[in-house]
Amino acid sequence: MKKSILLSLFTLLSFGIFSQSINKAKWEILGGIGPTGFLGDLGGGAGNGTHFVKDYNFSTTRFNIFAGIRYRQPLSRWAFRGNLYYGMVSGDDTHSKEAFRRNRNLNFRSPILELSGQVEFYIIRERTKRNYSISSLRGGRRKRKFGIYLFTGIGVFYYNPKEELNGNWYNVRDYHVEGQGLPGGPKQFSNFNIAIPIGIGYRCAINKKWSIGAELSVRKTFTDYIDGVSGRYYNKAALQAAYGSTAVALADPSLGTIPGATSPNADGTGAQRGDPKYKDSYMFFSVTVGYKFVKQHRTRAKF
Image 1 (tube, rainbow, N blue to C red):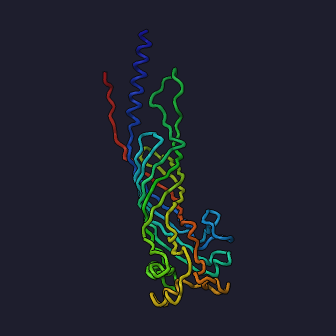
Image 2: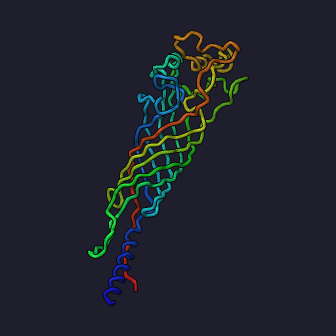
Image 3: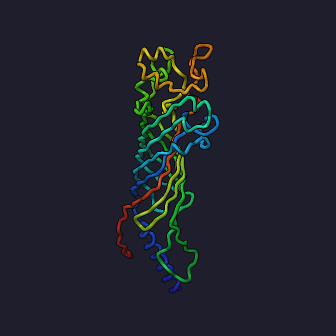
């Protein structure tokens, strides 16, 4: 009986020491860098534009960097993060093998500055060894240094599409290239929009403080103007009168290989320039580094 009581007390004390030892930092600062992709009206693959991954053209890949902070209870399946991303996205019809897009001959680049919050769910959690060793006890967990998680969230981002013409870059929004704000044209688009990140991540602990990882995500947005292209060609004479010859050249730099492709339709409406049915999206892949704020604890046995 005495041996059983002593063993029970020792086991409870051991678990108490273990519970103190895993009281690690809940906060972690993060940083990362990697390539950025874009799915929209410009560029793309050989077929008609789809706004899906199969329409992605790797030659338009650019870069992103980010900094963030993560809050996570020790070994919890859930974590919460705040992020600040900066990236570039681009597209160019000259990279497409589809005849209509090559003739359209439009291009763009745009910065992406995103502030977002996200929640992570760990489908595979890290494991730690018990801080005790009793040969008669079984079932202790083996150490696992990595975790895999899914994440989503919400953010706001700034974008500003620019188009290259004769070696110079012009802010598309300043020239109202689809007749924004003019009679019969669409409303002017905003430089700010909402993004919904959806992705998967991997995290591997190097030691108690440092970790490395990788993340892949797509950002769903609610705008079709990240590339400055969405609707129809506007009347060139009206655009010339309102914003000058530069606006006309930016609106329609087509090659002329498909006669009439950018001319008014038979009913007088403008020919199709983009496809407003699908919203634009962008993708981030990041190699990440994390640093935990680890607190040093002294454990005392209390009776």
